[in-house]
Length: 286
Image (tube, rainbow, N blue to C red; front, side, top):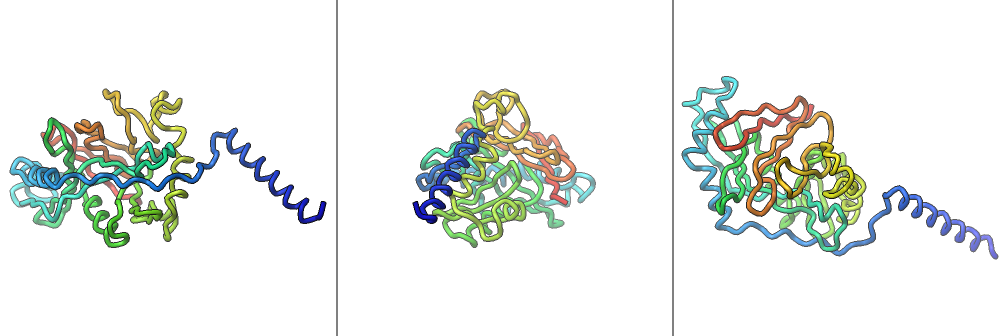
């Protein structure tokens, strides 16, 4: 046996040993999978109904109270309005994390519209299909949803903008590419982005043992993927680390969470605003 043959055999043995160790630890890399499916967009009629719900007089009255919290502005001077288009918001899908061939990276979570107050404050109005209609289920400060939708369209036209709520990261995916849209995403996959296969391997390592039905999920531990209280259907839990809290609203007709948001660095300040759910004030990471 030549020295080159001996080296090749040793390398093959080392690779096999490494793969066996990874498998025993439950961290075996995923095989190359089929390209992900593209999530079906919400129908135009649904987007229009959601926009109308966000702009309804009752919602605008609630928004006036929301913008007036903590004395930021007098309620009668807030004069909120809905600005721009309503956009779909997609969230990292458990089926993709599990490595299912052809699974879409993300699934539709809710629709979002941006509300603007007279003093420049901005808020995101979330709507979900409940009782056969698109209804307002949550209000959160800031305009992350529409802003990242626009940024994703600019960075990768025709792609799917989605969030990885466990780390509050936003991405855009099209074909084999996943690009970061915020600092959390850059920390996760690098400024230049990554391939779908590499991203799938990363989230599988992070959350693969926390999917519905896992021992982790059965323990009811916060973070990863877990049950929503009072519902037998399971989805992404939006919190993984200690500096984040979340508030969830009822689920939509399709079984997706109607609203579940993340507040960073200091927790969540919530206001009950008569929407049958909760309005959340998001705090940005320090």
